Length: 127
Length: 219
Image (cartoon, rainbow over all chains, first blue to last red; front, side, top):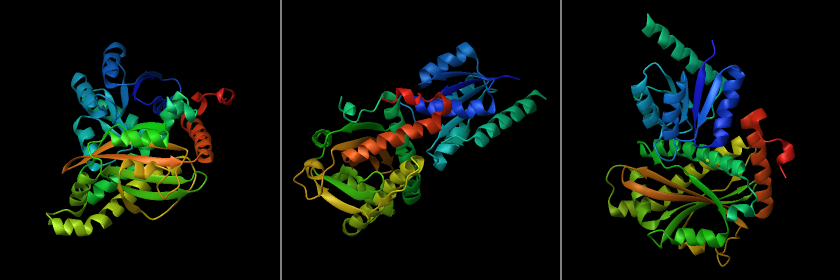
């Protein structure tokens, strides 16, 4: 089944990088992009993505704060925070916000794992 | 703007910032191990400026007296990298790294060594990650701790050779003793800047794949 993914990163190149990995896994999936948390929040309400992949360290609101807001909005949305900043505290905060932490640079394996985990979680809550 | 001197377009500057972000994040992870608590990082700002502009940017900080840890690097890209912060903050950084409640005498005694080690960890982490992502290796010298005003670090009157341009990275990192505003500067000569530009283009192609701008647009 085709899904919709929102990619949030202030770096255009980073968004292109995430897109490349996503295309390799799911060439048929739809994707939308935002360069900051505020635009991302608006886009989520408009286009209701199944998954949101966001950078952590962004000007303005950071990715973990955005993750918490989105999780509040829809607990079923698959949310991943992607960052090269792999300090334990950052990973813990991402989890507490209802997101899964994925190290940057993003790999196909990590992204596929995130999709599988989210699907499993949804199945469990639907049962 | 001075970025034009290097001829980096928006996407190339974006890629350079992303490289720096990867490098600094990796370096922060190592620093976190040293201070045993989270190192908060700001979003890095990257610009390419002349040595004169670098002096004036650093001159705007609240403290005239600065301390820097300097390391030379050699490879396809050669130059020197500096971790710079106000001298008044260097003791706070030492306290955070040493831990406990050392006396002023102890701090003074350990200052040089702790600064060199911290600089070594941050600069190596940063340079190493950038080099890995550019798929090049760099030989990095031992750290030196230098004290002075901004002009001492970048001016032609200093005993060290200056570069044609300074890749200037401004980043705040905070540890428990409060904000320690730090800068990372890399001085590169013209051949290294040209080599860097090409390596950045290759990096963009690897990261973005088929979405990267075609080679026809490289001119």
